[in-house]
Structures are given as C-alpha cells and as structure tokens.
Image 1 (cartoon, rainbow over the protein chains, first blue to last red):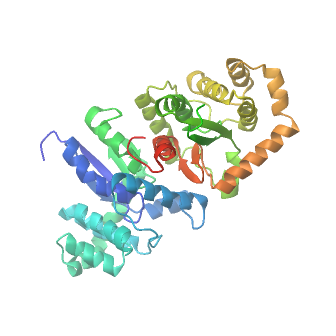
Image 2 (spheres, chains in turn cyan, purple):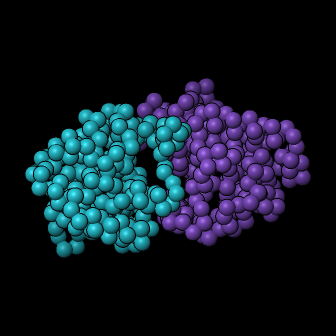
Image 3 (cartoon, one colour):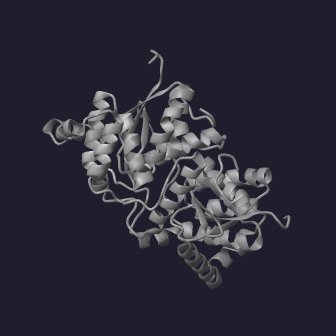
Length: 206
Length: 206
C-alpha cells in the first residue's frame, strides 16, 4: 500500500444483514478511490444487550422492511441475494472470532465475503460448520487450525478488547466505518466515509 | 399535475430530525424527475410507544451519531443547519395536526418546510407558539383560524385515522416514502423511492 493511502476501519459483525452489501462493495471502492479498509470484527450483540435493544425483532414491520430494502439495494448493486435466509444466525460469535484471526493474519476480507456469499447465496448461516469450513477453504485456510485458534483464550480476549475499542469509539451498529474519530454507520454511508477519508468532508461523490 | 405524474406518499412526523433533509430536497426531486409528493403527517410517537422503542434516547452513542450524520449530510446537500437545536420537541402532536390541516387545504409543503427552517436555522422547536405562528404566516395562513381547527375534534380524529393507515402499511419511522405498498424509509432512500415510482425498480439514478 502506498504511504499516503487513506485507511478506514470497517467495524463489523458477521451476522449483520446490511454488512453483506458493504463487504461486497468495498473492494471496488478500494480500487476506484485508492483507499484501504481494515476489517475489525466486534461483538455487536453484547453492545445491543447493553443498549437493551435488538434492531430486528421477529415479525416486526421494521424487520420486514429491512429484508425488502436489502433485496432492492442488492438488486441495485447487482449483488446476488436469495431470500429468505436463516436469521438471526446462532453462532455468530465463533464466526466473528474466526474473522478476527483473519484480520490478524491477512485473510479476513476473503473469509468474510465468502461467509456472506454462503449465507446469502446458499442459505448457510454464518458460524455453522458448513459455512465456516467452506469459507475458510475459500480464504486459503485449513479449517481445523483456525477453528482451534478461534476457540482459544487468546481469540476470546482479543475479541473482548476489540469490542471495548468499538464501544469507546461510539460504535452501535454494523457496518460502521471509522476515519479517526469520525463514524459512518451503515452500508449506505460507505460513500460518505470514503469521501471523508479522502477530502475531510462529505461530498456527493467521493 | 399531469395525468401520468407518479405520486409518492411522504409519511412524516414534524419533529423527526432527518425529515428536515427530505422536506427540503423534495421540491427539487419533483421538478427534476416529474413526480409529486403528498405529505401525510402521522403520530410516530404513538407507533414508537407501541414498539416499546425510542430511537434517539438522550446521551446514547446512536443519538450523538445522528446529530453528526445529520450535520454532515446537510452540509453535503447545502442545507443550512445550526446545531444544537431543542430535542425532542415537546408539542409535536399539535404541529402535526396543523400540518395535516395543511395537507387537506394544500399548504402542507410550505408549512412543514417553514417549520423545519424555524427549528434548524433559528432554534425554535416545532409546536412552539413562535414556530407555529411564523410558519403558518409563511404558508399564507392565519394562525388563529388554523390553531383552532388543529385543536378541534375533527383534526384529532383525522390524525388518528392517518396514523392507523400508516401503521397498517408497516410504517415505523419518518420520513417513509410509499409507492403503493412499497416502502422506503429515511431521507437516504428518497432516490430509491423516486426510482421505484418512475421505473418500478431501484436504479442508481432515478
């Protein structure tokens, strides 16, 4: 990466629905605008619990809307999506600790995208054995090694520390793009975040 | 209006912050894309109460984020904004019944925009005497007449009926744009809504 490449943190939790759009769109933004994203998985469920809030409860109008909006926007971006998919995913903590190991070792981007494709194209929920194994293989990793590490104490501790950093920064949803202290929440703020990273303000086109 | 002009309902509550951006942007969209918006004020606080939820509690990271995001996006659109402003506004029910009378009589658009300018440029909260009187005058209306009507039984009943229609449609936030049964929530879905009204699907440019 060039020395003056703007870097954005992408705080995310594998298991968030709208995050699918962002992780698929990010590589194009990196190429087109000369920026780089760092994937930073954290425990959003813990933060929701602390807020006493879950944004998409079953059978609510807001949840029904979320699926419809997600489908329409995926269509707009040409991103494949087959709904319905299992939701909420049961074992997202494991999937996120795997992604965190990927962030340390440099394959998070491939793993996270593969995991989302498994979920939204093939209906295999993130954190399930089938999703994890296939996504790790697509990221060039040996599932047994990574899963053992992801279940170890170091991974749990690091995940907790990353979640504390996210909380202290004021992150309350996924994806959240951070440029220093400046936060941009939601796939629909990806353009704003890149604009900020490049120009120090939000323009209509990054 | 031409016979084939697509019409979108803009379900809104005066008192919602992001709705400011939408009501200022809508006239330009009407001209540019040949669509028309109908303003439909409803009682969003009642729906929040039913959901057991208020999206922007004091001192929460999400609320701090909302103000920052609103300010950045207003800047992007060139919309004047002076923060902080009083929030939440105390008498929004009255402001919304006034807006509803405006919808029936054809001056809602002017009143709502004036009320938002009073709030975000001059710090006078919607529903306050100063905001109501000035905004009604800007909309060409005699404050005493309209306020009497807004406090009457008919206005209360109509407001309740409109809120029921919004609830039945699945509206849970403001602004929500509706094209038939298709909903688009948030100022940041204004482009999507107009695209749907014109093309029957969401394109990157309406």
